[in-house]
Amino acid sequence: MYIDLFAGCGGLSLGLYKAGLEGLFVIEKNESAFATLRYNLIEQHQHFQWPDWLEMSNMDINDLIHDKRQELISLRGQVSLVVGGPPCQGFSLAGQRKKNDIRNQLMNAYIEFIQLVQPEMLFFENVHGFTIDFTSKSNPKKKGIPYSEKLVKALKKEGYNVDYHMITMSDYGIPQKRVRFILFGIKDGEPKKFFDKLKSNREPFF
Image (cartoon, rainbow, N blue to C red; front, side):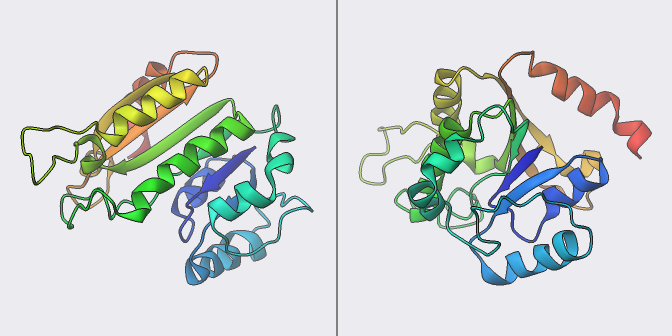
């Protein structure tokens, strides 16, 4: 059973559906994106076992954490996997990369969600810029801490074994040269095995 955070229109969930996994619910703030996911994966395929205590609608992850804290805690031991990554615009090297972009703070909500639910495994993705610090414009010699390092530190504190790689999407059949930060964490196991399987299954997948 998995949960998809910052789900968008359901790209990751679609892959997990085709892989045979079973979903519990998704969290997506954008109304149009959620409507697309709802039509394709909920109405057409009944892919999610949506809990009674959660409204089947678009919502902000911070509102969920605030309003349904005890319900999320009650999921401990029931969720095998949490997937997703917060919006990438604030981290992207193609954008303005503002240190105080409010979207960057959604990583903290992601961490809090993991703390509450304590899934067995987690899969996190973001852009290459997620691994690059925000250097102070007024003091270029002052380096910041990359969000990737903050995330890894927080997840290890929660008891996860963590590994991450920069993956070029064209190596896996995506017709573009986008590089993504992919992190895999697991409570009891070796996260390196995830990336070993990813590489060894590439040719059979093609």
